[in-house]
Length: 193
Image (cartoon, rainbow, N blue to C red; front, side, top):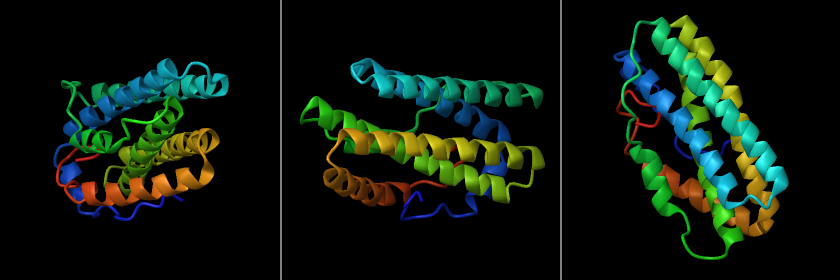
């Protein structure tokens, strides 16, 4: 379904397990950034009523996930650390088309968002299957399902607002680019690292 070209090396989970506090802090901030991204798309495209409605729900869900991760951090006696830079997302951001019409910019922003959700979903699936902590395994399985829904929302709206053949072509470019970018990641105890 996700179409990712390069799967995360399962040994990444071993790295994650060396510092659960770090992965949870990074994850919490990823959820906050995902909510902010949805709100930013709404701010720039408020004329699309259906998009606004669905992305408001998505942003609310991302903030709920932020709270769930924060609650998990507290329950384990950890502290929410400072916000982390997400180099993976920053590299993808540079690939976004900066020119073109507002409509083309919207479609590419939606594809950018779908790409991040796809990789997050893939990472959550891997964590749910391989992490030795049963609580975290269930937690990431539940969130994986939600991330898949977010991916579907973004890719669906990209197809709705763009020409289908252009969107499919551009999505393939995103998939190909992400395969190159992700080769440099999977070595740190962060969601995309």
